[in-house]
Image (cartoon, rainbow, N blue to C red; front, top):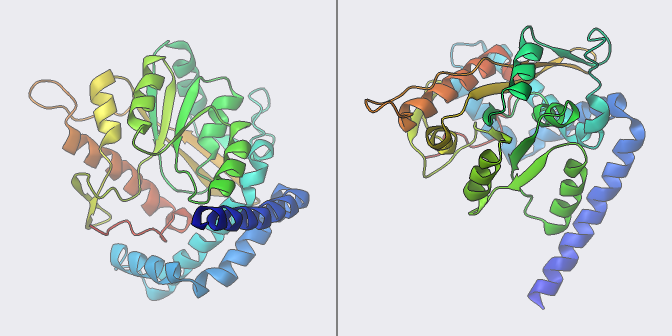
Length: 300
């Protein structure tokens, strides 16, 4: 009986979410993004996550005036709302045409196209790390749209019915999808064994991970990227989206990161995990209003 009630509850909530997706899809990407920003700016401060975000910003950026910290908090809610409402439009958002890079809503940072081409042609697997910045789904969309064999790790929503709908939306615009869970590391290794390019978000708390410094505070981090890099000795690149005015984006693919190694010449797990998080910290400091401050990143 309990399982039946839970299933009915999940399906009911999923039906509401599905209706919201339908409405947002009808609005088109620009109006949907703008609506999401306005709704999150209004509703976000009413949630418990608002306090978490405010405390995180105050602790990580204490040197900023109070007005600037308040602006970052407001922008973070707006970015989260935009990203949520852009979800059903991911395919339409990515309109980059290499033959006419000046057109459309997507531009590439200098050198990114050349690095992408090298990855296409080198015949090797690689790992991309990203963070919850701007619309963090776009790098995975870019990989599929431009023919890069890829897989991406993703977190499954707790609601099974919603998870099913979200997976259906993702499946059409991204490469192979690997749900987070106990089997994820094995599936990620299998993807690299097959020569795929593996993407993963690395900026969230991982309670069993090594302690690092992130934005001036001690945090626990996921060492999986460093462990995979150690096992496969493959290139590691950072990938990020930057939100621009007018519902536009700039995508950046970094050069391969030379990870720290130990005395035996193997990737140093602790040092490499810190190194990757240092890069993410630089991204957050560059565009703090585009990061997901609502997460309990520093809870040990």
